[in-house]
Length: 289
Image (cartoon, rainbow, N blue to C red; front, side, top):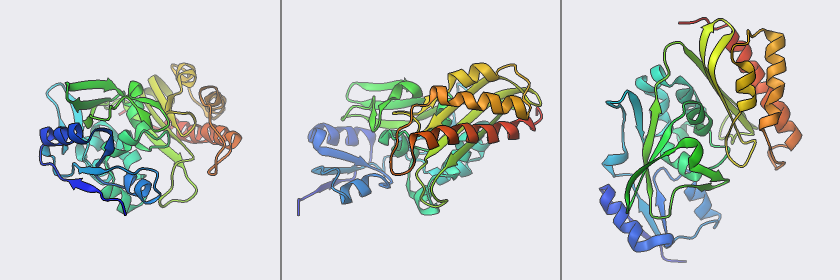
């Protein structure tokens, strides 16, 4: 059995020092819901595990002086889903976190881990796209902030360097005039990886009429994608069942899914349109707050 060194830093500086020492031979672990599986399947074989679970600088959920919501990387999906601040100001993210895996996964998995894994099927990511969030990163050269859409570069690839750590995400608040939803399709309710997911946020001018529309799809491209074709079509159009159906069918123009064991390309395209259609019908019945 290969010897594995485990380190448990208690500050961000100590964690960065360990990353500098071990370099590419290290793996950062928090909840471990993805990494432990990869270790078990021998998809990764680091010589050192750096457990950042005790680092206080990356914990907590709070409002910032600038009026945003900051969510520390160690925040679990269960914590985000139950946060009063998140439910009031970014409900689409609370909804997404509430649908991640099983209760066990939600109580162990972290939002920082979901981001760092950079899977196009990550449930929190479409919600973060429509919230136009940004990722706060720290490394040997200091802190930097990356817009959420620029962070992801491909399946399991991101802007995060091997010697950097995600501190958290900064989420602009949605105003009370905004409505939103998150929907996903999985093979089963528990422990399901998304076959397709969609997140929506838009300012409701009146029932069925929206501006500042943002739509993002997960698991339909190498990264989560903004459906800008649909966004343009839906803005300032009065939604009824017929127009919602027409607009939803435009979703395939922004999707480039693959065929894998969870679903075919054609199935994903159809279900992306259907999930959006269901959500738009629901939003069309929501009245302005």
